Amino acid sequence: MKHCFLNRNNQQPTTIRKIVVIGSGRVAWHLGKRLKARGLPVAQVVSRTAEHARALAGVLGARWTDDASEVLPDAGWLLIAVRDDAIAEVAAALAPHAPGALATHTSGATPGMVLQPFFKRHGVFYPLQSFSLEHSPVWSKIPFCVDASSDEDALFLEKMAGRIGKLVYRVDDAQRSILHVAAVFANNFANHCFAVADKLLAEKDLPFEMLHPLMEETLAKALLDAPARMQTGPALRGDAATVKRHLELLKNHPGWRELYAKMTRSINPDLPF
Ligand SMILES: NC(=O)c1ccc[n+]([C@@H]2O[C@H](COP(=O)([O-])OP(=O)(O)OC[C@H]3O[C@@H](n4cnc5c(N)ncnc54)[C@H](OP(=O)(O)O)[C@@H]3O)[C@@H](O)[C@H]2O)c1
Figure 1 (spheres, rainbow, N blue to C red):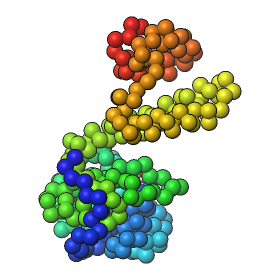
Figure 2 (figure 1 turned 60 degrees about the vertical axis):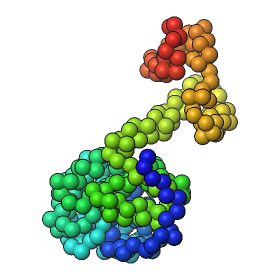
Figure 3 (figure 1 turned 180 degrees about the vertical axis):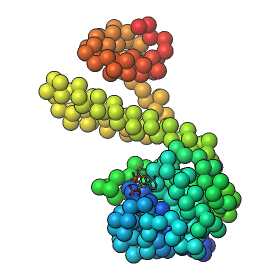
Figure 4 (figure 1 turned 135 degrees about the vertical axis):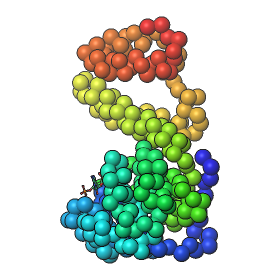
């Protein structure tokens, strides 16, 4: 990580030209509303489904269109928040109509370079959090990972992130791609393990709530120190007999058995089984 700015609100004000939100899904809703709430000039929503574009624009008090060629020609910042594999196609449709704008996407898994063929000024504005429509994000706890094709634009994005959040990092493509893999381990895979645990308990009529204190303790400890130092359990202890018994108990769930064995080997490659 190159920089972390804890609060940039006290910095010199930046002149901000019109912001156009592209897309009207989870990230577009949350970022759009937050930008607006922080007094930033969200001028238009461009999204392929008219009904969705209109709904978000209504909340933001902005103009809307479902036609990329109607993007405001004097847009300053195009915040592209569409599905990862649609970013290039959407950028291609927008570029001829707002060629001077800074175009950024919000994807952790997509290189910033995907915008380069279409926009001279391009970058990434990636909020490292899981967004859903049901939950309001805690903005002060979201790391914003920004990058841009010029230092000036990167600085602008850092300032914008500092206006809507607190944790701002300059992260290049190589760093962000690994960050995304790490996030899959820390969030998606960890959650999948919770789901497996829940199903195993349900088979024996035990409530998942019994594991809540253990889950809370695990997270609290992982936040305190290097998680590898906080590891406990039969794999780390080298308790081969217990591991063998667990594998036997999982014989009716070959997928979970394999997962258990792979996790165990990852924790302790020396275990003989
Ligand atoms: N959700 C998260 O937790 C999260 C967190 C960080 C970053 N991100 C990134 O943010 C971006 C948006 O994610 P999201 O969760 O907001 O997605 P989403 O809720 O599924 O919304 C996707 C948006 O993309 C539009 N779209 C899909 N395919 C399109 C196409 N072919 N052409 C034009 N528009 C298209 C959709 O239009 P319609 O309304 O017409 O369907 C919708 O407005 C992605 O790059 C994602 O990786 C997501």
